[in-house]
Image (cartoon, rainbow, N blue to C red; front, side, top):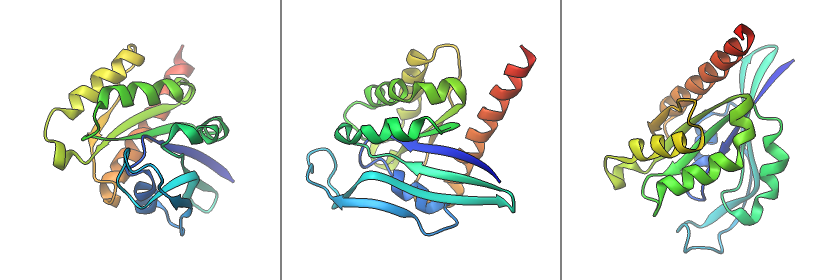
Length: 184
């Protein structure tokens, strides 16, 4: 059976768990615990190990969706899960104090996935922030990876359709990079 692993990363409160729930064909396995750091995100729970969902492509192929915790104190899970991933779906809340810093930090932490696979950035909560976030995120991505264009979308993690567009863009990015490696 062919399996493809996609990693969802980003700061706490960016919508990783919600995005996986929007996409998954199965009941999502989630390791939520009480949020003790309300200064970062005002939400009741936060992921402390991982979220897991999957999409069945056909009888012999599935896409595994893993979400990592957004807090640095749980970054040991980042190391465990990023080695298997072929692509990175980075979600960043557009109303964060410093969107560019968040994009740069996460792309640097997950750079090995970007180098071997692909990356797409989704800005959540754009409705409360207003325009301009896409350009900020694109410029921040270009600062980390100047030789590769990075697709950036404004998304609602609750929307299966919007998350499917991001996922399909990521798969196209991975496949294009694979094809380009074969040409060289």
